[in-house]
Length: 114
Image (cartoon, rainbow, N blue to C red; front, side, top):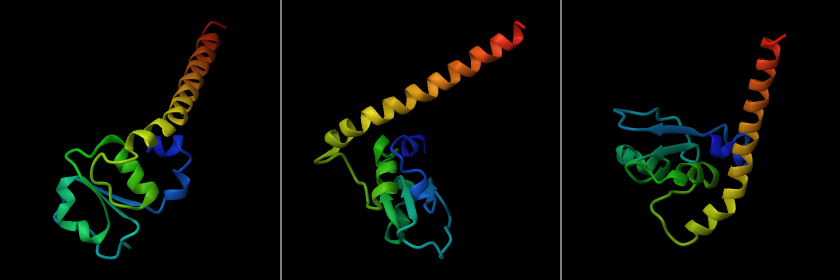
């Protein structure tokens, strides 16, 4: 989910219902475009939603399935280019989180020394 936040896609996809791992059943009333089925354990439900293949799925594929609402099967054309395009956004997001954490820790230390 942090990747979605870094790409400014988190709030746009709050309607996604994500299923991970083996399940005996999943609710019947979930629209196919909202159901994200992650991993090979969900294979028996693939006709009911967006499928992310793999065990485990490749790192970016879950995020891409949520964003694009399309099946993600394997590394293919455009994979490396898309990863490269997203990398600066991800790095900036992580840098921001680290800076905020360090600032909070510094403020706590300063408060403790007073």
